[in-house]
Image (cartoon, rainbow, N blue to C red):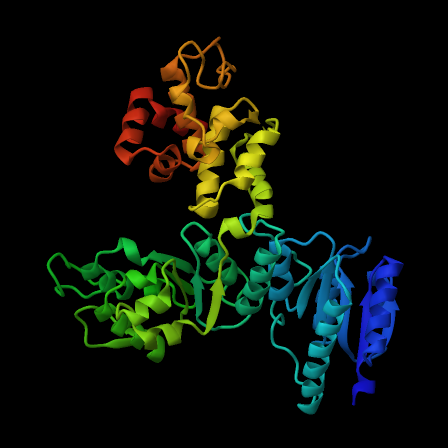
Length: 476
């Protein structure tokens, strides 16, 4: 049966193409080659292809367009995208749109043979089932490349996670995302939703840890009038709001055992009951849950139900901490810096020392902490982020505010330029900083307070003191 399996290698680099073709022939495949997307389309119907290796960058139409055509016209094909410029978002899109895998250059013979043997077993099984087609990717358009700008990274650890995210997205399984605080669990949950068949329906995020135990059931499942003090009308919950779409339950381990029983029923039966009501109603939602705690330890200590974990954990995704993907720090920092710039404004650069300090710090708060540090530094700097612009805990140096007498906080460098002013006083500096940070957070005061490492009341006093609400309103 193996001799009936056909493989195609598409790559405009002859050495790469010939190397892969030779490896596949040695492993028992009948192999054809193409140097361009157009060449591949010409032989698309020459065989029933079981395996295709295709480079992303082909000069003409790209690998995603080839994936789209093959997935539509030969839905049983196992398609591997290969690239020398791999990214996490690329891996996510590849697998979400139906690719079997996403292979990063340079790769060796072992990688090709591993994919070859796995694909051959799957192909033989498919032939035994009379050519049953893969379902993933049928309802999507692989040529329409989608990029999640917050899912930035090229590290093997993060690219591997994004491959899994793409594969999970095409299913309807519940998903459980784990990882330290700040690793981007909600960003990944949204990426799963956007690449699912529910993408046109609502995505509703719920921070379970922020809801009081006595209110979480009402908030999620709704209530009827008179069910408790203050319930003056019937109210639909967030579960109903997400009907047809996805609900994201962050910090799920913070919920009470009593609520977990009701949540388990909602998952098992696909129905909910509003607080105070005797009537159940069917609601179709996909559940994505997340936790930054050790869930198994929570189960062992009796704080989280094991049966609920089994129900939620149909597809498990673990996000690596930033210290395990240090090669992603530079592109993330540059991305966050670019977001702070106004249209047409020169991009902010990083001094070699500042970048080295960013890349060597352990980042216990992960991507969120990195964003806060970069946003603060960009707000303080004059188009180049230097060591002294970074938080003292990142650099290991004294905070800028503790600079020796007679020197400016930025080591005698001129602070951010303010039109009509030579050297700003402290009040002008504070005003400029708060305006830039609030612009970045789109007016979210709590997020701005977190970035500036002050409390919410302090931010509100700064806003009132400098009339910043009026400035932001005029800018919008």
